[in-house]
Length: 260
Image (cartoon, rainbow, N blue to C red):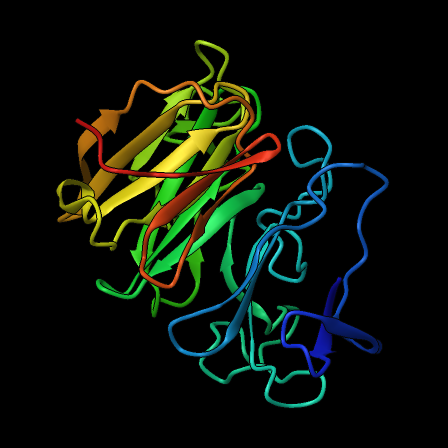
């Protein structure tokens, strides 16, 4: 469910009386994969990441169901009331396909980020029991299918071989070793305080608590780094107005700073 609120005279305080339902979709009886980040994209549209409905192995087959909002990244024009579907969405006006869908084949996108400098969209998608992944595609590219639940990371899910035609595979994946279990996506660093990491996309793992990064260059994750930190449980990242990067760790907010 996505709701809209209007602020009071204080721009940091919302008025609860202005609640407006934008969109909702039925969820399964499972307790996980309820939803994720809501963010405005480079084009001014509202994007929302929806998990596949939970359970293990996509039992409701939402990942590849183009008539289901679950397992998708949505793109909405919220300048109307409550929203309209942009005609540039890939399934706009098509029968048995939800026009709100921008990208498909996601298990639990946690989280995604737009990089204004390159026009790219980064999605950290949580895997099932073996692989975690980072997907990268042009933010303007409609109808990308990231493969779940046929694919888990760069491998076939529950099969020794599978047809990968039509899928956009991740630029990076990693296995569940050393305690890793659930990727947490961050942002591409475009700040000024640490020039040496400009252009690096940062991510963590909720269970392993590491801090890693890479640069995306010519379709490949290059300059991969593990920064040797143990951050505990990391549910999210943040950016300030100057492009500096923050990490949420437990009850703390940590800021990346230039080291020695």
